[in-house]
Length: 407
Figure 1: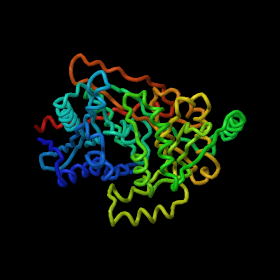
Figure 2: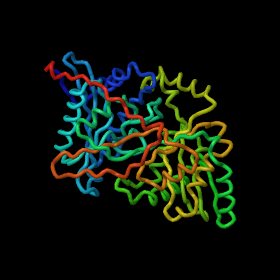
Figure 3: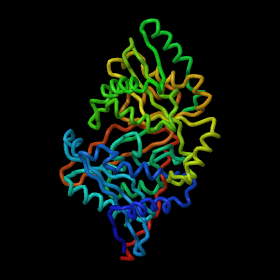
Figure 4: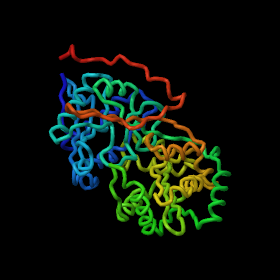
């Protein structure tokens, strides 16, 4: 027997956060996400999506009261006004290798979502920002990047046997900066520089207000056509920069200007996940000193792209290549010998094409799934691309125990 409880208080959160430590106890690759990064998603004071949405967190307990699985469910009523039918989401799913437990969690989340009016469910995704905690890891089981979903291979079987359909591919590109063709980008910059007034500028912390205005001008123009689009404002950007100040490197946060108009941006951060591993998901007076010491000792980092965009007025001007080339300039190559570029959906063929010209390759693949929750709803997946040969080996089908005989 088992039971499922909804997280309502600190005791519930404690059980919720215990689950992954049970699931991944023997996995050396796993790095625990910061508990505070997860809780903030469900805090109305921190996540503005909750102003026009609902969310719930659940924990599955076995017959002895031990946590064995977790899941979250959420729905954005405002976003659903733009869709053909209301869609909810699930995320932060973790479960021991037990099909009945996994299906019970999926069922609990689906029941909650149907009560809120959802006719389909996406997962595993984040409630809000699409650049973090998005998709099920299918290929590339390496230590995760900061705020990147990581999971055991057997989760794929859980999702597909419960009835989820692969809906979109989320690609992570990786490249050694020494292999990025800088000669090509320097020639591009030189050629365009003779015809246009183009300049690059990295973030200056004493000019955050101007950066925020220019970033918003590009971002809101670049992504307004997407159904998930939510405009950003300069105060939001300024707040994000201030909150992230301890980990950002202004030299890899880039804006490109075309005739003095903001034309594109590329935001990269040092990946700090390896520094966070000993903290085991907790930032407090016991773990912060160790984190600061490890940060002080680290001279070289992996770069992690978190945002990239080009204003539609300048997409034929070579801005994407200029941005990526400037971000990979000599002073950054020394500190960031390895770069992971902003995750991109496979159906964003323009972005995929730009990345492939950078001399980088797909390093890992996440899938976001969708399942209809009522008859008559047709799930139409986005366009998929063929994945590289070294990622094509299928995940082994595992024998997942059932507890049916115990009930």
